[in-house]
Image 1: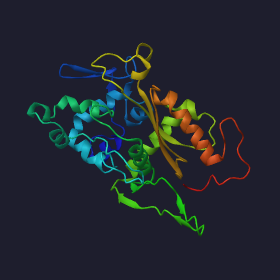
Image 2: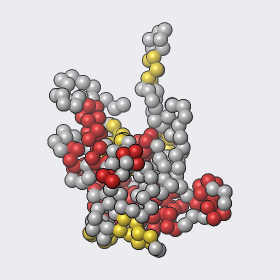
Image 3: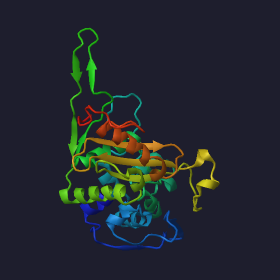
Image 4: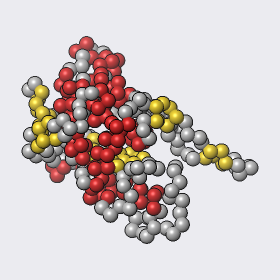
Length: 297
């Protein structure tokens, strides 16, 4: 959303909004997850501290179709083509999608209030983990998108010959390098001083990430409280990341079912994955003396 705003000229990085902890649209109040809000928020802070109100306002200013058209470039709402049967397309909501999805005229109309929650990835949004991984890899790769694969190579069982799966570029998204650099730098901030900082204390590399949650059921205006919700109805923890930040070798998307906040449940798992992939470290074990951690996968 931040990258879309920069690309379309809807926001400048230094523009500041005031977050009292909620955004009111019509007779509905959309709440931030921080009681009392984040105060004065620019774009960097909105990403590092995960300020919902910033993106409620941004979504309202952008409109649903502008959001959908930008997100479509990153593969949301489409199959990635990964070599696994049964891949889902997910849902990238738009006015056209809603007209096709519903049959009754009153259901087909897109209401302006529905756009607000889209700004923080909720509402009709439904993306698959592989779409999230592909999107963050594309961001890390300066807008060049590759088709994901399950395997690195196929071995002929008779001859033993290996056939490597060559990277297949899907498209290059036309993005300004300065916009990409700003968003990536803010994602570095997430892991160094923001919502995921605790998970990366003492890391021997610089990484970039973004924490999040996925609602399991609609709150209908109520305030979410994990302690008062049945475990099977608790939020899923989400986290996307790539590392090293200045020369990415690995990108990932994590979902921890009913794990709550991404910083609490998902980011620590990402740290373990990065430590193993980049440094050869197993959880609780010293780094291997000789490994191939530097090879991209």
